[in-house]
Every structure is written in structure tokens, then in C-alpha cells.
Length: 336
Image 1 (spheres, rainbow, N blue to C red):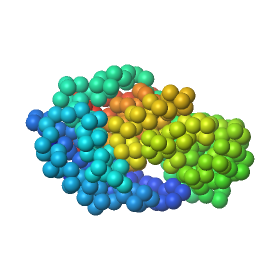
Image 2 (image 1 turned 180 degrees about the vertical axis):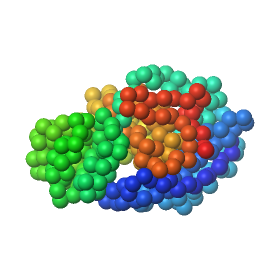
Image 3 (image 1 turned 60 degrees about the vertical axis):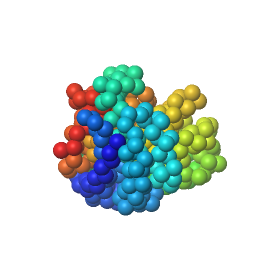
Image 4 (image 1 turned 90 degrees about the vertical axis):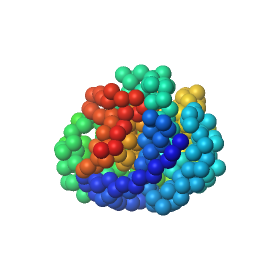
């Protein structure tokens, strides 16, 4: 197999702000894995919060080229294990390769990825549309610009409840709240009842990632379910979150790709936890991959390509009431 590494800049429609960063452009890395007549595409975005840059992702991937050149056809799970030593400390780069491997393998089998995984694309939950932190009038404008049945509201300010109260005046759509580690246990419990009254579905990662004692208290006393994000990065974290969160949000880039992501979802389901996959403002390459595994999920956040002013790829299209898959094998993603 031959590996191509392609960096891109993804322009956003609006400045995207969460509790610990803002951006107008998202750097992303596309991996193209070629084998014979077929190729697979994978993607991972940069993330300064996790120390992930284009440069360190490219460096990891460059080191795999010699190993990959000796391989032709292989199951993605086996390839993930073989190449794992190259990606110590950089699961983002590993995700890009793993995603490309699944796309390629499904094409080699003459199947769409959801067919390969024996999943029903009719069973996909509605994605939320994310509203980043901004002056509240700008947040209202974003909702009016993109009317949607379900919004994820990013919080982490000194006036979070005022924001939610104001946004509720402008829509009947359900909300999800993502504080990105910005609250403490007392705040989360105190806010939860009013948030429930304001038609909020759940709170995502309200406390710092390592505050498991605080989260146990929130888990017991919150009026809303709580979903782990930053507290659930690796496969080992799933068991840690049991009894502390009601569910987990698996980010494929943080986990190291589809391969470990599927194992995490399976384990969470076995524990009776809710399952979610979230995105990192990827193009339609990354979003298409998420869509193919979305039938496994209770919740999904795959609005990344919708937040872009210009996409670099064509692939799965996400609508309010359905997801449209292109008539192409693999993930269906194509670079434009």
C-alpha cells in the first residue's frame, strides 16, 4: 500500500469558540491509502489543546510508509495493531490512517462501510448542530441562520444560565449542553434542574476530566444525564466512566480511529451506558466515516462539515430528518 499525506485548511462559517479555544480556520490532515485500483481516505484535524499539529501527525505517518509498502490487502483491525507502535502519543494521526484503511477495505470487499459492519443506515439518530460560545445575540443569529431540531450549546462562561434562558426564547428545538470541563460539581447539580426545565437533553463533560469524585456526586444528584467526553479518551477510560457518567462520547480522532472506537462503543453498550460519537470540525471525509457507524449510537454529533464555509470533499449529506449516503463503496468520500 502507498500512503499519501495531504494537509488542508478548512475555513469556518463563523468563529468557533469553546471554553478553552477559538478558531476561524481548522487545519486538517487527509490520508490517502492506495492499493491497486482502490484507495481509502481518512482524516484527522489538529488540536492545540491535545498538542496535535500537522507536523507531528505527518511525522508519525511518514514513519509508517516502509511498513505499509510491504502490505497489500489486510483487515483494518490487523493493520491498526501492526502500526500501533508508530503512533504512541498521537492517536489523531493513527485515526487518519485507520479511517483510510476501513474505507479502502470496504471498497476492496465491494461494500459500503455500513454494509461491511452489518449496520442499518435507517437507524441513525438526528445529529445536533453546534452553537459555539459568542455574544448571545450572535448565538441567536446562528440558530436562526441554521434552523435545526437539536442544538448543542457550548458553554463555559460566567453567565451560562443566562445564555440558555435567552436561547430558549428563540426556538422550541431541544438543547444539549457542553461545558467542556468548565464547571464544578456544585454548579452542575445546581444548574441541572433548570436546564431540564428548559428542555435540555443532557450535559456533556461539565467537570474537569480528572474530577471523578465530583462527577460521582453529579451522577447521583443531577436532574439530567451526564455524558463523558474529555474523561473518555481511550478504551481503558470506558470502565472508569461506568457509574460516573450515563454515557460516553467517543471522538474517533482521540481514540485512534474507527477500530478502537467500535470496541469502546461495544463495551459501553455492554455496561448499559448510552453511546455517542462526536466530531472535531472535520470535512466530509471524517464526517462520512462517522455516519457509517452512526446506527450503533444513541446520540451523534456529526455537524462538522456543516460548520465550514467551504468543504474539501463530497460524501455523506446530513439533513434534519435523514442522512443521505452517496452511491459509492467505502465511506463514499471523495476529495473535490
